[in-house]
Image 1 (cartoon, rainbow, N blue to C red):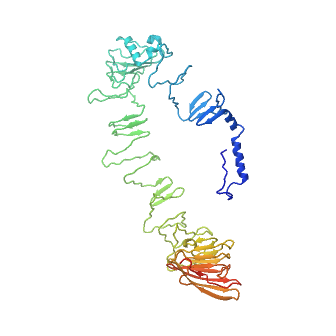
Image 2: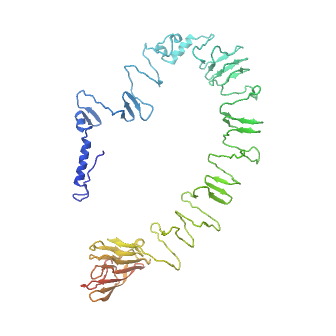
Length: 581
């Protein structure tokens, strides 16, 4: 459980903080967390001292035991301890930056690698690597470096016939490093017994086989041989090499199987030069023609992979014609830099282009230009000919239509603008065949009057309680024609005040009054400096139902007219004054 904080409020006794019951409930929860049964802080404090990034025991010579629950592990960063096993959570390698000394037996189940050298103490023995017959001793002093091994071989092996035998496998490997190995005469390279493979590995050197040599039983010339020369040799098995080249100037290389045999290329084949096929080329495997390959006859392949297909004839077409009802399937992106002509129907996903008609085989059609760009449909007679045209969102600079209607029963049509924009209907005459319903806005407190929010609406003076001053400030008069209609809905004994924004604006007009004592009617006009109207609920009117209208008629000039009542026991007085100018 996370620690719970008590809300003490913004200031003393302001009523914004937690109640006492809620506050003490949080205190109890925090103490339950602190003094839990299984993790009592007193137990921790009595045995362990935790401070300044250190944990020490308070018991002399006492151990610190960390025991996870069940099959859980102890984790320190990415290191994880489970029982006696150490592992890493975020990599396959654990790095120990200091020296390691093991007083017991060190067992390595995998490969043992050393970045510099492997040092064994004098007298140490190595088992399972070399025998005494091969090296003369198993002493670690003979295995200290590669130089000691080389010195031993140089002193033991002399320039004489070598007889290599393989006692326990079918493979015999001879590695002569950078030395040369030459076979001559008619004996060739032969194998006996159950030996199936002879491997000759000579780093950066040459194997020269002269005379008639028989390479039998799947003999292999290893690709560590940079440029072997084989003269007049035959093989009854297989020949493995990285390169076959001709040793004669401008000489051909002929691969000619016997009888009905074929030349088989069992792996990926790269042809980097010009290849000419005069008859049928049947490729069953993955073959790469990397150079300028020319197939003069028929090329049959399960699949052809190439970066470019070009015609070798001037102005010649390239025809790709599948058989029967087969189709040409292009699974990747297609880039056509020239003119692309499709004489039949063109299907792209769910879109169908047939003649002059673009249609969808399923779903809707969406035309989306790039950000900031527009969609243009041009022509002399562009029409939306469907019986109904529905737009979720239609954005247009100009919309011309004879009729706008809703296709949903009893649905409204909303025309809204962005920001301070207005809806303008510009014509010589506007005819409303139905009713016009202005919205109602109620002022319950001091506010600023705006054209966008209040002009043309029915504005109710309805201060809740009828005993608080409400001051309403008009916007700057510009001659906009905006009309503000006020009706008293709540009598306010602390005044409704309507005034202009600054000393440049004035109010001109007249207010009519009915004195309910004797049903006498009187009127009060404005003066040149009038800029404020005060309705006090008594002598200046303000009974529920009283009405006044203010119109923006010119720059810095408002017009006012209205009808007020004064209750019995009071006499009418002018509502106009100059409090701003």
